[in-house]
Each structure stands twice: as structure tokens, then as C-alpha cells.
Length: 339
Image 1 (cartoon, one colour):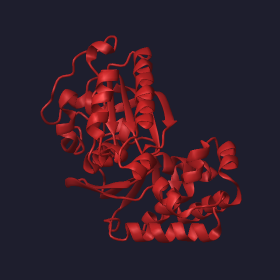
Image 2 (cartoon, one colour; image 1 turned 180 degrees about the horizontal axis):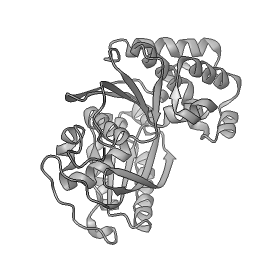
Image 3 (cartoon, helix red, strand yellow; image 1 turned 120 degrees about the horizontal axis):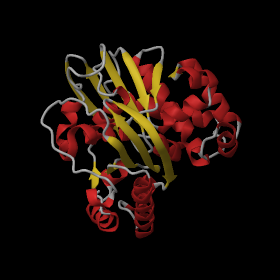
Image 4 (cartoon, one colour; image 1 turned 120 degrees about the vertical axis):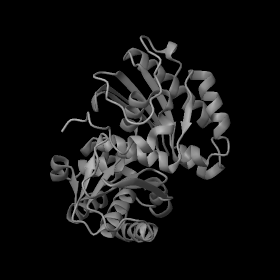
């Protein structure tokens, strides 16, 4: 966003390499345009920490539109622009210093992504950054770790609606990222026809997920971290996981049993999840189980922070040149980081 469009905004500088964290960078806002939803997160940046201010989302199902048409139809584009205009107004209300729009999987595939970006800039005054798989994964790593170097080898997995992105990070080397073109929405839409899903459908979901992750670099890791709405919502429906933020094979079996026992609307009402999100959870749970099996680890940690938090931190610490410094930022903040 043009700084003049947000009250009190200051023009960000461009840093080169790591730098000391500002004591207080004000409120930053990131809006991520995904396959299932458009998600708004606002947080106050205090050094290397974020204090949540607001978190909102709207379900637009843009991934399904691109699946059908190869682009965003005019109705989908208009609704997207309308929601982004609303989020600009929300950022102003919060006195945000920075607002950043990022596009993920559906916009990477949409044939008209360039014209969509031009429409968004014209109607909101803010540029759209369509992230590569690698950029998305690195920003999710930054958000989940706050820039702390991992101990051993960490695998971070973000299960979106249309794809699953991952990044392997080590304390002694550069992170490596990739993706699998299978997400919770794409998998569920391909397999599930009943509500709730049948046992046979759940078995088919697991089979598809295992095939999809078989070639991924999910083995030989010391820690598995899950980010994104799929993992967070799975933790919601298993009370013990809600408390300790960990998913295990046994807890996933409990999740599958609950998802197979009631329609999506009932699951949504019971656990405070949107109905459309609840409908996609069987596919998401299958991908989590497949990744956990492949890793050989007994449990995966669920992080509430991810892509949007990573964007806010990157913009606060690197200013206008944040995209060119994403890889460097994932290596850690430097000597000023808290012990």
C-alpha cells in the first residue's frame, strides 16, 4: 500500500543483510489470498515478536474457480477486490503502518494473474505480490519460528487448499523449499461425495495422500511443524491437541472418527469452525497423517503463526526490499536476538 493511504505510515527503508530489530515497528498487516480463503492478520511488531491485533478471513474458493476455468472469472475477481478494499479500510482503522497483499497457489496458476494484480492496485492502492512456492514456504518458516535457527533439522509443512508447501531448515545451512500440488480442498473435492465421509472415502483420501507425499523430503528430520488453518482446525477437534498443540497418529484417528460421525455443519457448530472448513478437514487430516508417517516422528507440532506473520516480520525488518531478503531473513536475526 502507498504509505499515504494509511494514517501515520512511515516510508520503510531497505536493509542489506541482517539487522537489529526495531523496538516497536507499529502495527503491520498481511493479507494472504489462498485457494479457500482470503485471510487478514494484523499484529504489532515488537522486536522479533508479534502481538496479535486482529485476525479475520472470508471464504472465496478461488482455487476451485481456477481449477474450472484456468483464471479468475469476473465475478470472482470483483468479489476479491471488494474484500480487499474492506481490508484496506480495516487496516486504516487499526492505524497500520504497513499493509501487504500476497497471492499464493490459485494466483500462481491463474492465466490472468497479471490483470488481477493491476485491478487490485488500481482499486486499493496496494500492490499484489504473487509468491513462488519457495517464497511462501520461507515466509511461513519465518512466521512460525520468529527467525530463530532450528536445533537439528526442522521440517515445516503448510497444508493449504490447493497445495502443500514445505521447507527443510537446519541450523548450519540454507533452508530448502518445495511443494506438492495436493491440498485439503483439492483432495477432498476429488474423493469425498458424502457428508459425513464414508470409511471407504477416508481410506481413499489416505491412499491419495500417501502417494502424493511419497517422493517428498519428509524423512530424516528432527522436528515436524504444521502451520495453516488445516492443522489448527484439526487440533480444535481433539481436546488434548488443543491444549498441547501436538498431533499424533492416535489423535488423528480420533479426528477421523469424529469427522466420519457427523455432517460438516454439525462439526462446525460443535468446534467453532466454519462449515466449509469442516468439510475440507478429512482431506487435510489425510495429508497430515501421510506426512507424519513419512517423517517417522511420533508427533507434529501445530503452530498458529505462519505465512502472514512471516510477511509482517519480513516487511518490518527489511522494508521495501523484503522479497529480495526472504532467504536471508530465515537464517536468523543476528546477535541482538533474545536468548
